Image (tube, rainbow, N blue to C red; front, side, top):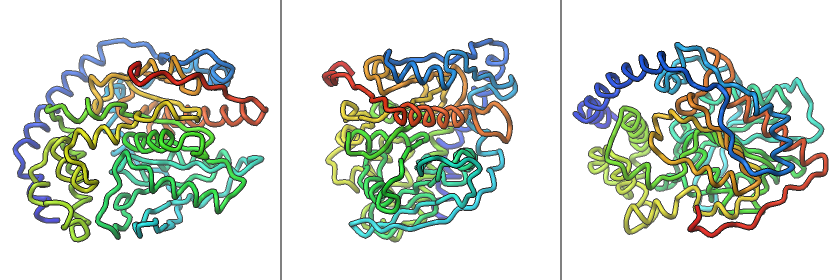
Amino acid sequence: MIWLAYSIIGSLPFYLAVFGTVVISILIYIKSILQKSSTIPKLYFKESALASHLLKRCRLMNRKFDPPWWISNAHVQTILPFLLPSEELEYDREYLQMKDRGVVALDWVVQVSIHKRKRCTILLVIPGFTANALSVSKLCGLAAHKGYRPVVFNPRGFGNSNLTTAKLLSYGDPTDLRQVIKYIHGCYPKALITMIGYGNGCSLLLSYLGEYGSSANICAGACISACFDYTERFSKDKRGMYDLLYLSKLKCTIGAHSKALSNKIDLNELLRAWSYRRFDEVVYSKMYGFSNVEEFWERNNPLRDVDEIAVPLLFINSLDDPFYSNIKIPYELCKYYPQFLMVATEKGGHCSFTEKICDVTWAEKLAIDYIDSVLEFTNKGHTIKYGKSPSRSTI
């Protein structure tokens, strides 16, 4: 770990990116204070009985996101979750062994429900790969108080979990998640399972729902700050502070498992990898046996099987997300598929959407309200009719 720390701290690109980002952030922050923006998010959806129900029950036509001016800047929003204290929740960790003898970890919230639901409903939370259960404690606390059984999914090697195989889970590989869903259904045969993903955890959620289609055994899902096109995102040479900090955290994770991964990853090459393209070439492309990084990105594109997704799904994205700046959001998907709903805010940063300090975020409240509304819709005997899938060329 010492060699990794020295490499990160002594990296010239790291210092340049931090300095440049700080200067630009200050200028953008001053500009954002002077500008006024709409507090009503933009909605993208296809007219349907489900959409009408959701608009009414979630109050989406007048549901404002209006943070105070001093935390409205995109960078302030993005950094706040790392500075604010997490809700104190007790978790019970459970390790599951996969078919290839890899191990994933499930963190179950130890709870006493205030609101009792008629049917056991499990909320499976997928945080970003460099995050853990503590980072989503406020969401889990809210869900627990509403009668859900929250559980946080930690991929193999992440979330302080063990790595027993020479393989890290990629953001487009849902095989472990599939086994976890089957395990939960085996433990709770009559339970409803819902999902919420954050950041690149959304990519895993979308990959799972697309790859397994109508057999996904999920009732509803929500994606907070999803990235829809990794080829466009990762192929850019421009690097900012967030990119380097994120890559640094990924390198620290790999460094913690260097013994298990030494035969798969060239650690010297990893130290010099300061772009997503190079990182994926050194780590995931070789680990998964792809001939080049473009082939890996194509196979792991979160929307590669979007035609097959058969679950009501909410997308919450901020237009000022510094992680995904200038990345196109596929609004046309939500205008074509009746099971998709997009809520786009002008502010909110990346996976933040903070309105009040030390409170559940605006996006997390909306995600829970959305899942509640979908379950209410289906429990009343309504069925969700899906349109014919468009050809891939239209997406």
